[in-house]
Image 1 (cartoon, rainbow, N blue to C red):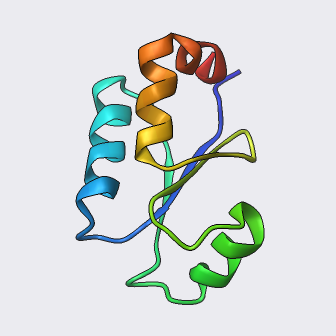
Image 2 (image 1 turned 90 degrees about the vertical axis):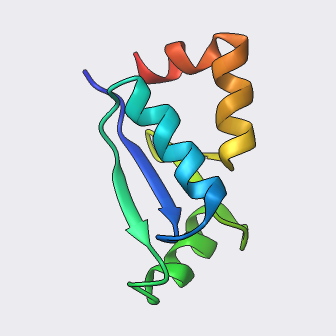
Length: 84
């Protein structure tokens, strides 16, 4: 089974671009919600993640945080476990 990865972000945010680049480099598929293009998704992001800052990343419906949190998981080797 492949992990379900979702990103709430904007089309221009450098932190969002960094998160996408990391996932792309690992050939990880993800669903992206661009809240600058789909403003109603902002309320859903707040409901699901409890944070206003973008990006917000979820793996298997569990909020893991921002791009910095994603990179920390990658550096520690824990991202592999979550994506397995």
